[in-house]
Image (cartoon, rainbow, N blue to C red; front, side, top):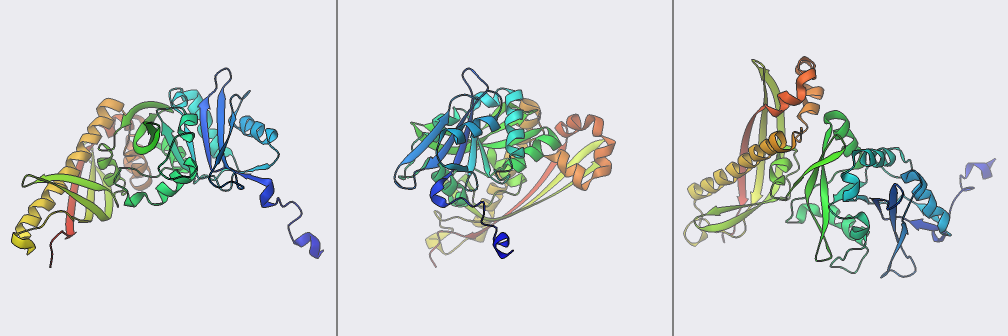
Length: 354
């Protein structure tokens, strides 16, 4: 009986596993899907092995099984860090829906893995170049682990997040990855509605999104002050949102409190400090964030016609009576919503020498 309690009867030794670091999904040439699995060669750390299945008869699942059938080791997804979805999938709502559904239902893949979308083929991304001598999969995984230290406007989005957004508001904002001179670049986002791509957000457009969604920690903002471009790095950020309704008008109050570091500017003569000057700069940063939220909301409402901020889900969770009242016209009401951002930034340190 003790032997049966050990639980080792079905174990697979490490040397007999093929660890999938990343998954790429493209539209197939003749058939429906092309799946790329990025698997490291454990015997040669400096090299990368890409196992590519160019076609699949029916599904993502069958494509993955085909890869497993063509190699000697057992495919293992327990170490999979992220999935890249190619642009040709994004342009087809039926294919994208099937990909999202397959990833959500696959019990071998964690629903917490990062999802990235591209304006290129996923296969091109996984064969791209990185600065370090490492696998693309490891590079991207490490990049997201340290993304709060980076200067680019990026955020994490898991399979679970994407599914929730698409089901609750019919739209999703998914981080974007591309190639510039054959090198990997992460930044910006793709806007999806009803499982189809409707637009792209550049890195600067993401400012409003990051602050609204309480994802602004680590981001940088640039302001012109006294003829000098001054950057601030957000070290702390907290966003609280309250929705209400008055005379048929939906209202969204957004309270944003931030702290940040300015390291390239000295306030006052000889860096002794000037509270009035500091307060003016804080007001400028606050205005930039407020304007970014308004600008992005206009883009969501007029250009993309999406609930990009996820206000529908906020109403469903915290203001259900309002949601129920306008359920049949909720999309139109959200496009006409009155946003009232209240931003407070405190500069906690500067380049002053004390």
